[in-house]
Amino acid sequence: NAGVTQTPKFQVLKTGQSMTLQCAQDMNHEYMSWYRQDPGMGLRLIHYSVGAGITDQGEVPNGYNVSRSTTEDFPLRLLSAAPSQTSVYFCASSYSRVSDTQYFGPGTRLTVL
Amino acid sequence: EDKVVQSPLSLVVHEGDTVTLNCSYEVTNFRSLLWYKQEKKAPTFLFMLTSSGIEKKSGRLSSILDKKELSSILNITATQTGDSAIYLCAVARRGTGNQFYFGTGTSLTVIP
Image 1 (cartoon, rainbow over the protein chains, first blue to last red):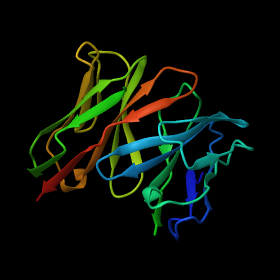
Image 2: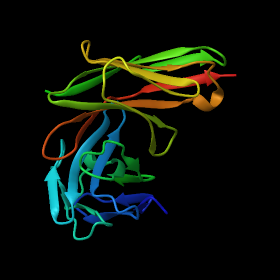
Image 3: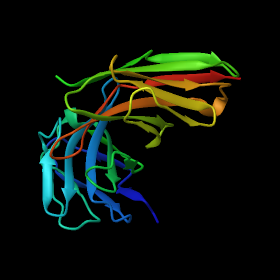
């Protein structure tokens, strides 16, 4: 099993550009989520999904969209990048909505100029 | 407002020392508390605690939850340089989906 994979590892965008961060897991996990990690702020939940076709907002959803068309994939879309979105983004998954043990991907370091 | 607070923010110790990391929380509908270790990459899972007073152990690491005091401690005995990392505490909340609240972490540096 590859576990949770994320692409790209690094990305530089200009303000106003859009892009999609990819996340995939091969563990047949029901629950997937996106976090951003900023210095001094810890990990903050952006969006999460409890199964294919079901998504919901987390703590800091503004400026981001998600979709979950398959169990395996959970892409995060930045609609119009802003410097405030400069961060490290982690995707995570867990077996089910009642399983609290999350497995994290390697992260994407995004810089918005 | 739900929050998780960790202390200290950073810690520098010598190899062989014992350290205690603290996590306190104010989260409605508490379900569980989790500890993660992060070494310049993705967090890796250490422990999950759901019941008060029960100690979870793995080698030199142990953790205990105090639901009355809304807190948890993570102990590391006989520290090694490989223990240098950021230790994250997270609290899971009951609800329609999995809501996790993370603390800002404790940065531990172990000097040889």
